[in-house]
Length: 235
Image (cartoon, rainbow, N blue to C red; front, side, top):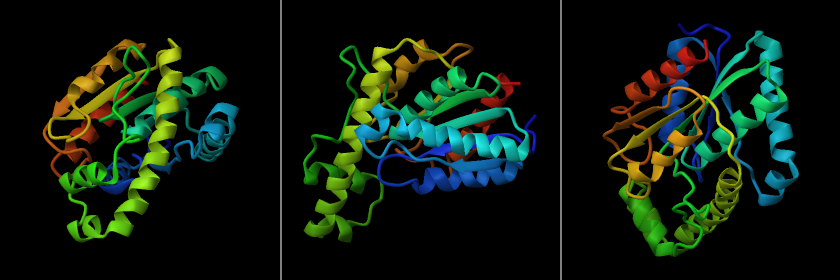
């Protein structure tokens, strides 16, 4: 059962929240709980120095003080899933009174070398192909200057994601954890997400459904059920 003072925290994929964020907002409204839109680490330095987490903990603590809540589901899409897992682990350490779990959506698990499928080394044209497969307007992809700007920003964010993935690989911590994968993601396959099962401290819920990289109207009900399931595990 979802309570009014439960909180969903959302970390976006590189670039923007898009339809996955829109779906998370709608789900929070339907469930009658708060939604916190949370940032990924903007730079490697923000991540390694702890500035990112310190700011994040302040945001979460302020919401808890307002609502008197102690149950939090951190939802992360792609790169955001790396942030969600990291934040959940750190909150369990620094704020043991907060019941927190993570839901990773199309988030690759770091391999044996600590690396993930990444856009950090992709060319503008390769990134354009991935964006096109996800419905990015073709006229913007065909605009060389626009594509260069978008690709440059995505590569910068992906470089930060690579560092966060490496840090996760270096640790052995576990959190209450569920994963959601889609079969139609042109970049991250369900197989890339399988390793998350080793980082769950409870029952690992892994759902695979139809869809592309982002959550859409068809897969939103699956996301809602997954969020509710994780809240249930935190009860």
